[in-house]
Image 1 (spheres, rainbow, N blue to C red):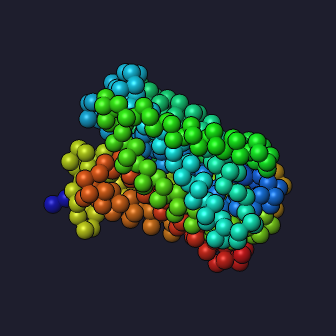
Image 2: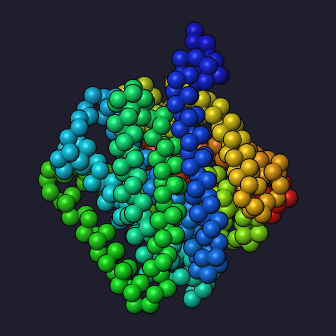
Image 3: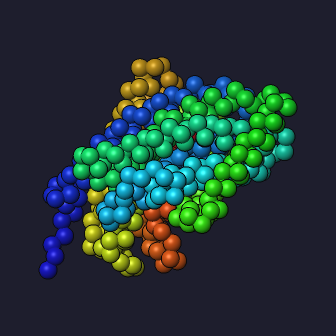
Amino acid sequence: MRVRRPLAGLFSAGVGDAGQSFAALALSVVASLVAGFSLAAFESDLERFPGLLLFVPPAIGLRGNVFGPLGGRLSTSIQTGTFSWSWRPDSLLGQNVIASMTTSLVAALVISGLAEVVAIGVLGSGKAIGLAEFIVVSVIGGALASLVVVVITLGLTVASVRFGWDLDNVTAPMVTAAGDLVTLPTLVFATRFIDLGSTTTILAVVAAVVSVASLAPLVRPSMATGRRIVVESLPVLCGAGLLSLVAGVAVERNKADFLDATVLLVLLPGYLTTAGALGGILSNRLGTKVHLGLVEAARRPRGVALDDMRSMMLLAAPIFLLLGIVVGVAGELTGQTSPGFGVLVGVVVSGGLLASVVVAAMAYYGTLLVVRFGLDPDNHGIPIVTATIDVVGAITLVGALVVWGVA
């Protein structure tokens, strides 16, 4: 009879996995400060350009949703023995990179259109920035960020092969961290090209044309793998973007609280992406084990799937505590307005743990759902989790602010 050990994921043979995951998550927390301070410095633009704040969750999430699955696919190919360092466009690696860059551009274009519709619905016609502005910020800012994040993802792949890391343990938090670190500054940079009249319109048209044209190389017969990645990924990425916009609505409607206590703007990127990274680690592990035949569909998680879920939840408490402490200290040192150090830490830990419970369930059942429909869990696991946690994260954060008397 198998003996269940609740702490096995941290204090047994899984200690190496837990150590890799915790180190990657801790780096992600520190990196999120850069994104958080970028958002806090963005305060005047958030007031000047209504609708931009609701665009923050999908903008942050898209890079992780695209390049997290790239790392997951590369991890699966490494562990199944099909990976090779070939940079030809039609090689497995080449098609994965091209498909990821293409989905990043096209999804950014679609999400900018969705953002305009949602902004009009929330703020009213004429009260939010226009479609051209959303396209410029989303596509140009996103493209610059994607170039950096794809290099980091490939660097992690090199390091995993060289040092024997399990890519499933480090990809989600490190790619998420890279996305946070790079995306918000590039979006802030891209806002310099909006509110310029016809120049903004021309830039938006060029960005849209380039995004659509990026699909052309995938038409060739030799690019079947890349084509499948794009076809499977785009619907879930756009759906994830729409859900993330719902999270943005929750943030936009409580914008006054975030602008009054600017430490919450510093917290927001790290809060959303830490829970998403935890779920991403779980999704990557489950996706790889599905390919290896170690996880089977079951109404209730069991075996290695249950062990992985327990391990993720045990990581959640210390990493959210670390996030609360780091953001609280950084906010104090930089003079951010704050509800108080203890209250801030309480908000982060209580909201984060609740969000993690939901994301664990979504990672497991979401993986089984996509497998049931014959789809690749490496393409869908992280976007499903991230989209869910954007909504759940925004709701739990606002809810925790209410419970702790901040909002």
